[in-house]
Length: 423
Image (cartoon, rainbow, N blue to C red; front, side, top):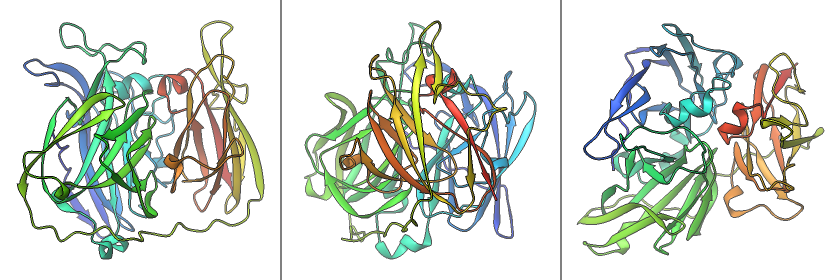
């Protein structure tokens, strides 16, 4: 299994690490013995990992060497509106844009990807995504696995033709699962604990992860560490979501092979190959979730399709219009958003992503949240005809942001709306 390269800053100025990264076309080997044309950050597939630190700024210039407009959204990032990658804030061909991320949030597994409206789904499908990991000094005392034992793993799917080209079409017809850009790879591990950070970077696919029935200890979600570890044997992950596990391979003798599967489909093999000294640990308590004040506002959000002609994505009955502000949110307010999938009649699946802030899932259809809802979230799956209540606080930044279905083919045809944080 390839590990995405770590991008190194080209300069350090005071409290800011500065980077530069080209967005360009490339030919890469995905299927053995042949090359595939992709769109890549730095020409890589997967893009390079950016390692940030809580409380320390990252400034990064993206140079667009493509023949089309693009932009960059830091998914899960608490960032100023000018650096959020608003779908209409584009980098034209041969243009550049500087994004600044202040990293005023706890440690978390984030990712960056294209968010150019109408083309975001195809651009992400063709390769425009990468990890952005916020490391947090507040977590050091926990002694979780770190360094080469802290591994980001990007999951996604694709359809290839006979010439190894990725075919962009129906997202339900993509049978090949890629793990860090490789098909059915293996990963050699030592007999010790690993921290594995999984990201679903598919545009629509949902994964049901399991490891031959072996317990996986969940320690983190979209927004960072949970309050305490949770053992699971299977975990669902919809498009855009992240989950962190600690897996102890020390429980297995050398020569053991364990298969990570999506349901019954094997996608990654772990080969236990060596003994190792392990000074890491898995504590009983991780990190308490920040308490949220009482909500001042309740809002209703319904995701659906207009199927009267070519499908048009709707939020509360309206397609995306960048000239329209759907909600005005007061800075400092805590709100409850009740997000519903209005396509129960058609059986269409959706999920929901909120820019700027993380949220807590309060309940689903009046019942307790799912196991996959634990912790701070920015993306959740919403099945046909169901709803979920979310609680969030809009803390400091002002400006316009979006919320949308993160099945990107849905947002690309309008299933997106805009809110503005005001004083």
